[in-house]
Image (cartoon, rainbow, N blue to C red; front, side):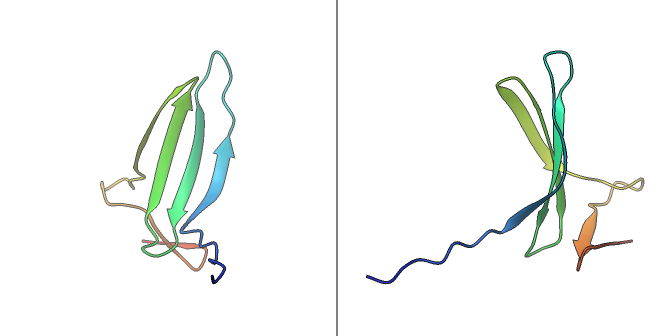
Length: 68
């Protein structure tokens, strides 16, 4: 049986650890589409949403640079 190659589609580009009194955050980039997502967590709960710019459009990163 062939060994499966591990493919990582998402890359964490920023992480801020939380505490008992403050939530934690991380920004993940989908390497196929370039769309940035923000994940917020506090204790055992969390949520994920696209990261939006000031015009309400998704933040897109290609080759390590944000596209405007």
